[in-house]
Image (cartoon, rainbow, N blue to C red):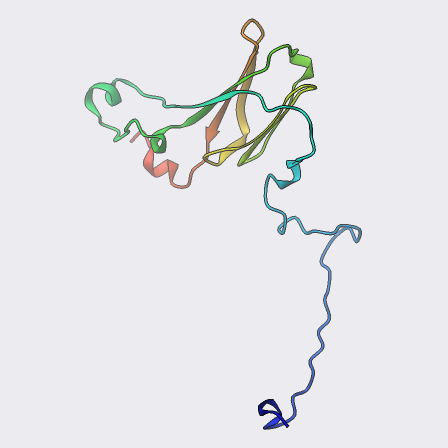
Length: 155
C-alpha cells in the first residue's frame, strides 16, 4: 500500500494519435520544422564566402533638411537590406540563389552561404545582380515589417 493507492481506482486512458498529413511517408509536418533548417548541412565541404550586409533608406529633401517624416538613421527605419557577397572565380551561370522570408541560401560549386537575415523580407520582391569585374553578387531585398504602412506612410 502506498499513498498513491488511496482513493478511487484510476482508469487508464488510451488515446489514439491521428496523422494529419497529405503524404503518409512524411516524417515531419511543415509547421514542426523551423524555417531555414532544411538548408542546414554541416557536412558540406564548401567554404563560406565573405559578405557584407548594409541597410538602405529611401530619403527625400523633406527627410534630409526638414525631418518631416520622422525617419532616423537606425536600421529600424530602413526599407531595404543590401547584401554584397564576394564570389571569386565564379561565373554567373554557376550561382544558385534561394530567398525565403528569413533566410538567404546561396550555392556555387566552390562556395555555400546560408544566411539568416536580420529582418523578415519580402521574398517575392527583390533584386540580384552579379558584378563580374569585381566578382561580387549584390542582392537587394525589401524589408517586410508589421506596421510599415503606419510608420512610413507618405501622408
